[in-house]
Length: 299
Image (cartoon, rainbow, N blue to C red):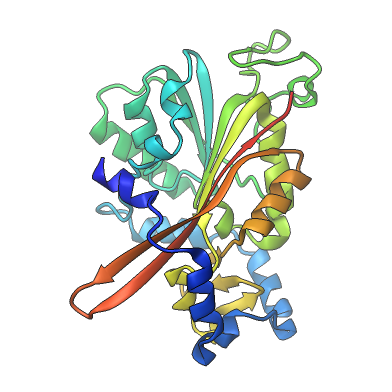
């Protein structure tokens, strides 16, 4: 579990990095909203295909490492009771799903992605790693543009009129699982156009059972990845486009807090996770920043 310990360590204070970035003239394009980029950002709202192409290109080999540290960061995924349901949003190639399935055989995982290619990769990786995965189900869905299927939570369950609790199953609709106990958003929201984020989070809120948890991890403000973007890749405030057309947004704590509380969530945990890695060959320090959060749907 050394990898897990590394990901949650506090190697430096975020304000230390903030001071470095904001006093470096070469990084000034990251600091201010530039109005002329607004029109550029609109064209990326219309193209749903970059992630499909991304997963087609990276179909061989493991492009992402299995995220084993998540079981330490979110111990609720291990300690939850039998018949618990989890919805993994933006499953990619299964790097989040796999450690959860390994760590708790009592949990049923429903995984979705906007890319059908990603779902193929996830299924392949699970089949290679786990003998039987009867507690895993996947489906295609872009949660930033459409509702989750009604079998996840029917209209009655979304309204909460049945007084749902953990392990509750819908008694009105045989197809409906009655909502989920957990939603995981792991490096997913940052790939959503910022204009769609509030709608996407409200959709997650709608399918959670009262008392359920949304577990969040994503790129933090001034992470090394952000600082590598050239000025021409900036398409909106703290939002960038990669050469393959996929988007990347970098969150401060206040932005995350407002997005989730505006959707109705209660903040349980929210902090920056700051890790310093050293490139020994180049003799450079690399500062990584991730936002770690837990949010509860109130009863």
